[in-house]
Length: 246
Image 1 (cartoon, rainbow, N blue to C red):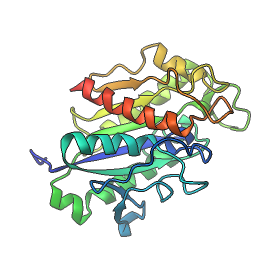
Image 2: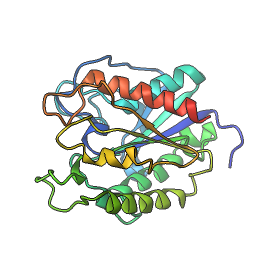
Image 3: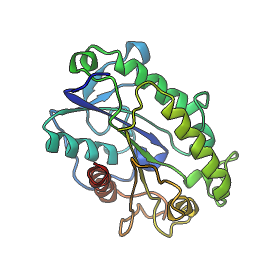
């Protein structure tokens, strides 16, 4: 692997709070000349300036906010380096769609990451590894998530599926011992927050793992989706969590 990459590659995955709910339009909406987003176009994909409202952020509504963008902007500013984002966050997705290389959503994230790593921009920057993976998921694996037919509703089952997902990520050639994995808590005391038990149980406990707290963060009114200001704050907390891992 390249010893001194001149930029950082950050992935993000999960469900609607990682994507940004269409009503989560508050908070700052930064645009940075140093933050780029992959358009998820597969082998024909390309990079564009990361901007809310464009894929792979939420294209619905009035430019919904996104925690990964705030993380990336803060990382680029602090390191004085370009940051490249590859994301695949899917509304309503259960951990079942993420638990293995062949699972629909993890497969897509891995595939797009592989294509992005072969792009001229990342090759020129010497990037062949992932710096950080951002994750926010779990609402669809709450027993009360009546709208999701296939899900895991116990801590034991969710923990096992999560461990399978982490093992699948660790098998990728771009994952290293230095790759950080940072998850965000679900809305505190929300109606789909049961899977916060995964974090309160200390189940995310690797040497490069961290959890960004959702304490004090607001929601869009449904007690499930973080609002725009909350997503901004969560992204910055995710950055602070990365700093704490170094």
